[in-house]
Picture 1 (cartoon, rainbow, N blue to C red):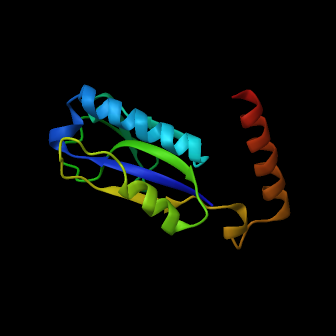
Picture 2: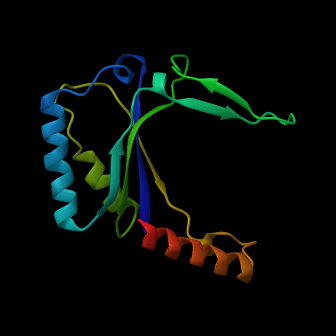
Length: 140
């Protein structure tokens, strides 16, 4: 099973760069996950001031809102994609995540949906998705 681990940030931590200590600890943690064979991908994100949101509200054209998103309590600071046996294994890994500065934070864990999770998936769409995934992996 694959899980997306969403590392949340807040108004205070969104605009400041991670400390050298945090970067070093995260590097060690990432290395542990690579050695264990669970880390498939992971990245930190730039501050929300450099981002944009596209809002779909039912009108003809989507609206673009430029960052920063200081009013939001749901800012994403980074992510991992982990391959684990089950949700519990993923939780155990994330409980070990470094937090050397003792920051208050929240990490969300969500299983990545597989094609078999969608009851309305037609064979044609499944075949197309399979081809696109193979092509994307080949191009990477």
